[in-house]
Image 1 (tube, rainbow, N blue to C red):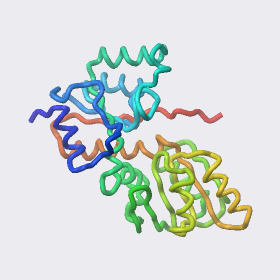
Image 2: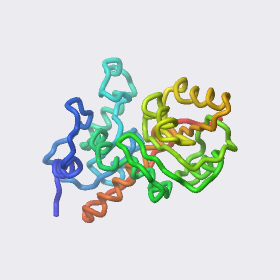
Image 3: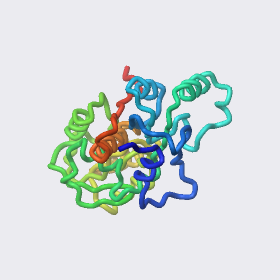
Image 4: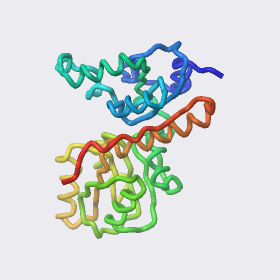
Length: 264
């Protein structure tokens, strides 16, 4: 059975109410294009685009934007050589690229969160699920042990930790993406009585400084920052797995990109 890009998009967004200012958009591409293959990825980097082309896929579903800004192309990029080279590659490829950001975060539960919890093999530990966070009760372990466990499960080289590494923890709050700032992260310590927050990223002078002061006061609080992509890429892998089961005749691949940062 053939499927068009429009049919896949409708499937992904069925029953989901996105905001009027949604960033979810097919650009470039045409809704009536027949899908030859699908690639999902955290971000449509040039590497991901080249991999999609080599796989014979003509439709990329990406979580974050193509051109380095949440709200789309910024005027400062119009004559930038990096932007121009990438734009030419996309135009020449004939790819359709759909950003699935707002809708997947509005799945119940959040599809990106589901992917991360499954990657960590912690989905059975969830005791409370909210749109912006999940509360878990995990087997008791020290913060350092949690960090090492996460690195092994997600196949990442590092995480960043605030707090005492030897602090035991069981009640954990998890947030994906850019949710590690003051709101909604810090209230979880009080309102949800968590020992540890695991988040993608956030301003370094907000929640990390709170945790530093809390520890100085003798309070047991800790924070693990995974990185934005590291927290959300598992959700796009999960999406590829789900779509593969729903559309078995379409070749569907998740492309794991290379880490942004090198650790020296």
